[in-house]
Length: 290
Image (cartoon, rainbow, N blue to C red; front, side):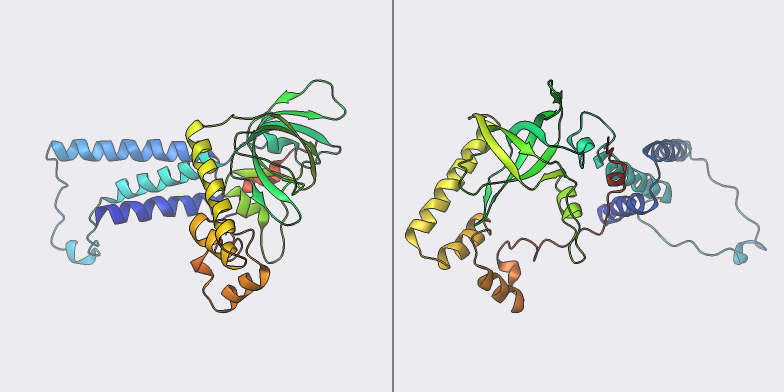
């Protein structure tokens, strides 16, 4: 039971920080004050200091406190820690070394980085997640070191693997928002704040990234190839979605059938079982356009 109360307080802190928008310094001050209050309370308890009892005439007028398994100061401290965790997860979009600082800048950019996930191949394009390393506007001669994840779309015929170091050229944008679905919030929950919808690709070198992850994703690619060799579509695409989480090849009629029958949770269909985040990252609106 105490763990349940602590978890609820931590989650409440995340929701509170997302909705009231206090700066991180204010949460640090609150956490420090509550930590000091909790320490004093613990110290007095160790000394067996008890409050002065009230007179009988006043006691009946006071409300009876609800029994809690954890003292309120500790719950309040955990709540502020949840708020601090949320604030720390938000990137500083005004940082000139963060990739999203250059979103919506006029002109094309050349972005160098390493493919950080399994390429998501579609019929008309391939989505890749890039751990960025360097950025150079077309109007500049020298590039700038950058960091942060970026989502880019490249031609479907491009052969890419996890760990490839590539250079992408295109317009860097803030991920879009639609009336029914916020792609911006969906990507922000995954730490992606920049989007290159049309890009030209050049592979610089291969075999980068984490060796263990590279081996796991190589095994996944071989398993996907084996599935399509053993079964025809749409059975192969459906099996790939269930076993490997590769939902891009599932035909749209099959996706719609799962959606209409309320069974889309069986497979990982993007946009069906990934609800739109209700927490809007406020620092998105601080992107410099210079």
